[in-house]
Length: 330
Image (cartoon, rainbow, N blue to C red; front, top):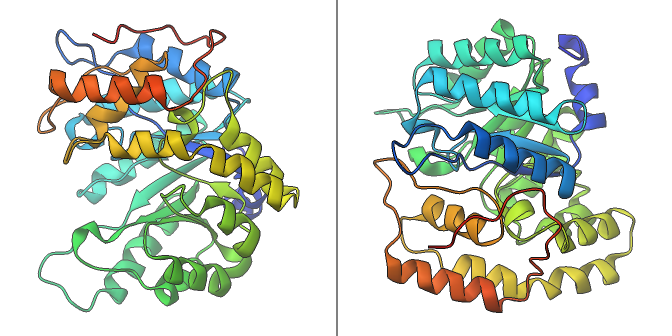
């Protein structure tokens, strides 16, 4: 590891900055095995062309739920190897089974990852959850040395309120949170937790305002940093840098210029096919996408045609300078 457990918060405050993106996992079309070569090529594009600050690896966007433990470890190995000292890694070790969470997290520690991110657990038949959730993260904090990010969105039918998150953030190696809730809640947590916790959320919609108004330092998650950018068109990075430098009006103009891209990316996403749509978008802009695994559904030819038309007309400069190979749009 790059720091002691007691140094985790300071290390994250210094290094967990800028644009981080959640990786989609490419599978081979013939047998749906992990496309290791394609994954590596994507990493080289994300790190060398787009200069992302770090990668959030094998989360829900990355279909961790359809992968074996050994496959997940392999994606971790590839990420740490490809990022090296050029970009950070936050590895998703979330699972319904706590032993699996700990096994994956220890692997992340052993291979030199920067952080792990662990989703709040599914809780069935419970209504008073605060003590359960605090104990869950307390046990993980005690068991692991690596910096831990909380990952919470109310997809399990409950909400971790800001006060609970701030309490958990008092633990020594709880360093950040991906907090996919309403802006009122994540603003309140930002104020409550102070230097104890780096707060981010999954949406790019208010990223600029969150930099300016809340002092946020990292876009921790989701795919826009590599779906709304190419080697020759890096307006998300540009408006991020401008906002962090205090040039808010210019940043807002650059941000707003991406509206056609933003609309195309969101507006062509079929219901219940987010990973499939985003993987196909990857292919159209020169990255490696591939099919999704069951239980997810792949795109129809009609859906592909709609997405292809949107990419061609949204104004994103596809250029030719990417190190990621162009992939057939068929």
